Image (tube, rainbow, N blue to C red; front, side, top):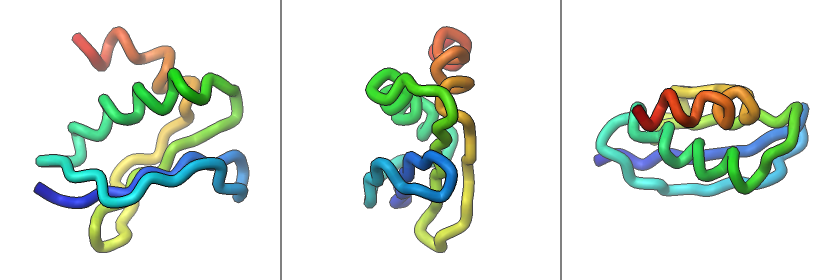
Length: 74
């Protein structure tokens, strides 16, 4: 398991940040992104997921992730 950080941004402004989310691999982050997209359903937001070495492993528009939710869950 590795630790990941999730940052919700609008432009350069950080709206919400969650640190030390333990996941077996970065693809498991999509479920967490789905939760964020339902909590923050606003256009223009993006989520940045970084690993323990501060590398960006996922960067996605939150509304796009929200719209993809049924596809991701399948």
